Length: 221
Image (cartoon, rainbow, N blue to C red):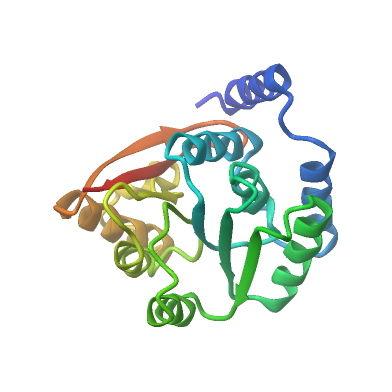
């Protein structure tokens, strides 16, 4: 597999559209400085998410997994002035970095960060009747992806777009004997997604600076 070609094409696309501005580059730098793992989406994937958010006319977005706020900024920039993005993050230190980056982007009026275990935050969102959301992006720890998806359905309405990242894992999902819990987590999710009658869904493979992976895309019926 010629990963250098994928990276070059990714760079070509990025240069062509020039979408990763100083704020987004600064966000990546702040994450590196804080020791936050560089497992965020790529610039082109971020723009793809932004396009999806605009396509579905999202005014209310839920993100499961804020990390340093990189994908948060891409998504929030698709919102109207009266929109809202709620992002969930387990680590307080990560959330603190994300908050500073969101403020730097001028998006703090439309972004709310909730810190804690995602399962508990999701249950609280439902209990407080804070749904439904127009778009939900899942990009957190992989073993409970199925449970995150089930919560996403509870917080959705007909027409809600649900996107889950990292569901191909460089093709490792083909290995039924893989002992990596991240792989087994997305394998379980992919099967549940395919069998679910509440959504119309598919998975697209992605290549680029983030190598070979994939995103699941589902629309609630």
